[in-house]
Amino acid sequence: MSEGLGARVIFRIVGGPLDGVVITETTIWAVIVSIGLIIFAICATRKLERYPKGLQAVAELIVEYVYKFVHDTMGKRNMSFAPYIGTLFLFLLFGNALGLLGFRPFTADMNATFAMSALVFMLIQINSIRSRGFGHYLKHFADPYPFMVPIKVLEEFTFPISLAFRIFGNILAGVIIMELAMEGLKSLSLHTLHLPIPLLQTVLPLPLNLFFDIFEPILQAFVFTMLTMSFIAKAILSRPETDDDESPGHEPERGEGFNEDDLFVGGADYSDVRGYGEKQAESA
Amino acid sequence: MDTSGISPQAFVLGLSALGAGIAMIVGFGVGIGQGIATGKALESIARQPEAKGDIQTTMFIGLAMTETSVIFALIIAIILVFANPLVGLLPQ
Image (cartoon, rainbow over all chains, first blue to last red; front, side, top):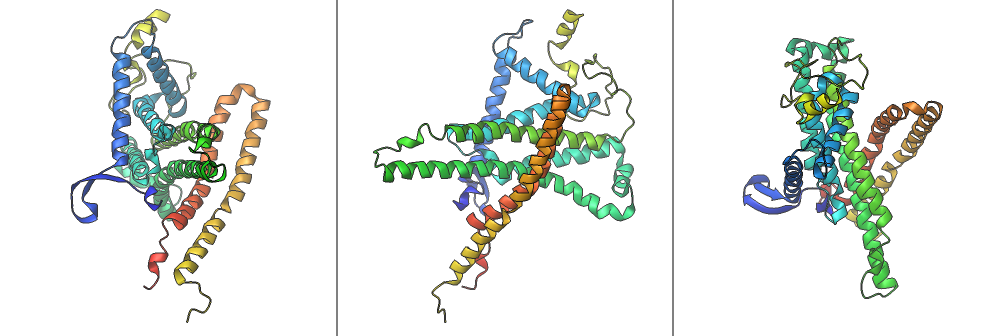
């Protein structure tokens, strides 16, 4: 059971100190989930139509929801983070829900969650430096009082650590409880009821599955992306507000309110979504 | 020498299991705190149903923040039970 805490090595490419270069179960599942998402994205956007149906409708629903979510949480000027946030959410969601297929969710491996929170840490720091300038970035650690510098530096590190531990702990607790329940039902049906097959494992764990493999993954993916968004927005927020006081229902025109210096991820903005301009023209 | 018949390893493992149980007492305080937060959120939704979305989002962030301490306790408990580092410290 103790190997359930770390990575499970599938095969080894190069031997060496500290296990050398290895391929783990986590890596393989992460690649499989990524490939699945990429295939879905390609299939859904291959033949774009004005009136979406089928996969395109699903994809548009997801994209619209993510953009609205990022708009409400981070403000209009940070819309360029929406593709990253949406990808992170879907990746974490399917990674957490792997238990539904009977596999171990790859977020129950500490390496995966820490890798993702390290990414978030880099995003926060780089965006903080970009928006403040390096001098002000150093200065903001001593913001109210200089003696608080150690605490503020510590705060920068405790956030990604707690972010990684939160999703890891929740998913691992789910995995352990599911495993205990399955083992318990197995021994109950085999040794107490003397059934030839572990029949009790069929329907009885469904409520547990519903909670630990559907509700908890959605909640944890939501919490992870939500905290990521609010902390990135907090890192950028020190600049004067100019265009955030409009009503949240307002949809930005192409180029409006976007400053190229503000954009960090990919440089894509809201108006780059394919078909967006057509829809705008239609409603006008 | 060892009159009671308990090996040092068994002693360490037993106390570790006890420690894992004690660590999870954190759930007591976190449960009360999350209950209060959810109750207050329900009150404000009842008072202002149109602000339901905002209240829910803020509540989830707050709950996630509160949950951190119990998650740390859970990780300590899991490490003590499944990947005990203390047994390796015993003199062989």
